[in-house]
Length: 135
Image (cartoon, rainbow, N blue to C red):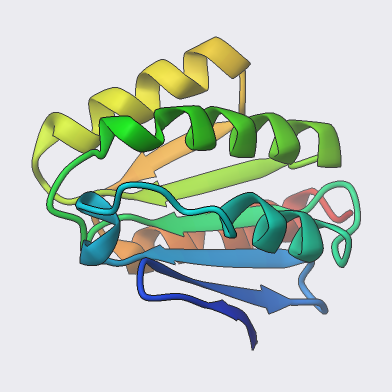
């Protein structure tokens, strides 16, 4: 897996062989005012995957949602949908705060999102999904 975006607020990795992206949100994103490079990083990465890709979105290290960034999150999900995402597994902290925001965004954009509180379960799900639905 190749590290393709390293920011204080997040890390994004790409596994070209599995057509898979891993996104790790860091605690710093909870308090940041804006992230002008966020969508550009994602656009660059989405150019390197094929339709049918999967995403592991690990937000378990967060302190909670950052409502100032909701417009960015909506735009990201629209980009993922336009790029042909087949499945997303989100890893949340055990608090329900982040899961509620994710559920609202997922319903609004009709994305194939599956939520977990354990990263290994999410990875296992995506591996099984990729094997059952090759791109």
